[in-house]
Image (tube, rainbow, N blue to C red):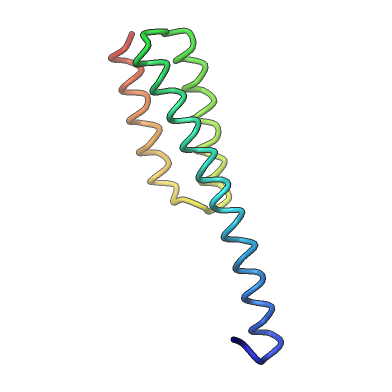
Length: 87
């Protein structure tokens, strides 16, 4: 356990940021899962709207620095490829 005041603060700040990052990653995973479910069901209209939402969420998370921008671009590219093969 930390004794110095600044170290105690860093522990609390890290805990808050970890919780926020976990929430953001969970939102991205949920958006991707909903997109993949729509593709699996064969519903292209729902898949298109789910893709747009997932793309928006992924890029927002990348902008905030939770995931790297190249990782975000890779995820979006793979989702777009799945959408194109489904159409």
